[in-house]
Image (cartoon, rainbow, N blue to C red; front, top):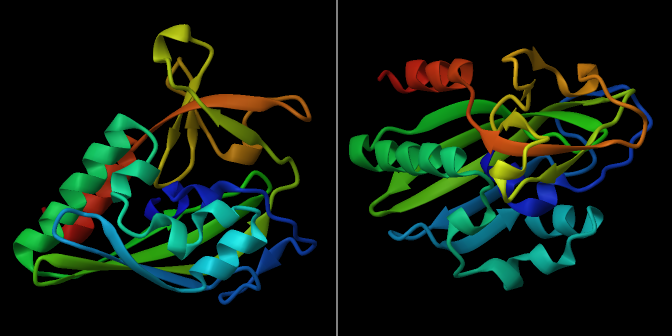
Length: 202
């Protein structure tokens, strides 16, 4: 979720193995630190290498320091969800560990995020636990004008797609033609909201 919304996490990734165990070649660990106003003030781990490997040199650490985290989060619902999550960790002082998905068009990435408050600041660490190549890759374009229609919802946590009838699909199960680009609006689905609340004890 959070790491993926820092845009380079959604770039293309090439792989030739259907599954990888923890510690994949293309970044096993990234971290960032937020100040009291949720601006990115430090990044570490494999951040820069992952950005460069995925063709997003414009998002290396030197280019994003001082920018608000919200700049890199797609979808109003997801931004509100993240704001509430960060506020919860700050308010309680209790760390949180949350699983999520961080897919590229052709690879499912199963991730884990940890959040910890250090005074008014927050440390967010992200680990890739495993990867699975999709045999039916699907590319996405974020819709900026929802009124235009022709879009589906994509959950920022589990990456499942929900069509206008309410039916949900895994990315590689969504009906499409090869080479299609699906127009999406990001949100956090009710199931993921319940799971996160349960983990936080709310």
